[in-house]
Length: 236
Image (cartoon, rainbow, N blue to C red; front, side, top):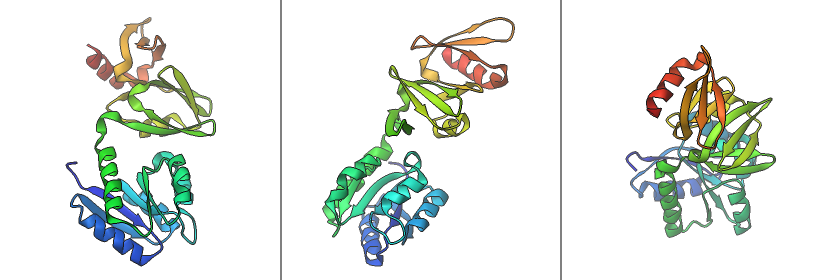
């Protein structure tokens, strides 16, 4: 990676925090931007500092590492490596989309392996993914498979690889989480993936219809004229 990995360490034990910091500093491309001694500090720091990687202790006095993830939101969590004294937490670690987990007492080689995995994940910019909550389950979608997103009452509906996903989220919030280089909003209630646009045709004096690769045809709004012009330029 060209820029250092911005890491946050969360553990209620000062000795554990120092041990992780010392090992990370020897990695060369990891910058420790903060340490937290409890769950509430962690929630605040994740929101304020936007780290790219978090080492998160599972067992803390005020709230567990899993509580921290729930408070921040699985879809908003940075790449996460759980730190735990109990390997029984392994299954739940992957349920909350943690990249890896490291057992205490921490083995230096095992920590290096976890950091290497994080490095590969953070460097994989070609396959941007987005985590969504769909009817009680967490799904990790490749953004390039998403053809369009449409408003559906208090929800948004994502269309991806022949499947649909219903997410309780506003269009504005969803748009903020998507890669702006890939997606464009063409209507108050419609966002499309640029790559999946196949044709743009005029329908009447002021309306455009956007044809997508999956066969869908969606209306575009005049309000999003600048977005549409950019889309037309890209489609030529």
